[in-house]
Image (tube, rainbow, N blue to C red; front, top):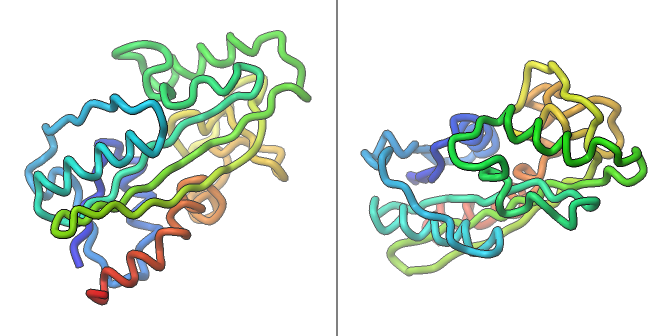
Length: 202
């Protein structure tokens, strides 16, 4: 079964390839199907709405089963920000480093016990033949570090997020382990039975 991973983010694509590696699924990138330049605007107000917008658009454009996610970092001391705006937190054209710097600045005087946060991921797999969305979600709790880690793994906000039960950031945790514990992994684990059924044509 072909599964189009509807993301321009190479880090996410690598993670999804790893997560579904032992299923009978051929993972395709947007470039593989000639949709690398198709940009779907995320106009939803929730993670689920944005994920479904993307999954449906890419599924219909490609004629293939498409998986999209919307994920973000929600910081309790910032009333859940940056949330659905995580990728746009520091404005258009900003880098991951810019977004991390802005977040650390916003929490500059916030003590450890109030730096709680969580990553949320909603995955939607959209079947273009049945016009059917399948939805799963994962929540990954932790806290925001006081400074950025120079860990060699991860992307996005990983270098400033310390998962519960750890004393290092996600950027210091090897990919195999991250792919077992992350919000994306948790959501993907929920989606696995659906993907298994679809791969069998059920």
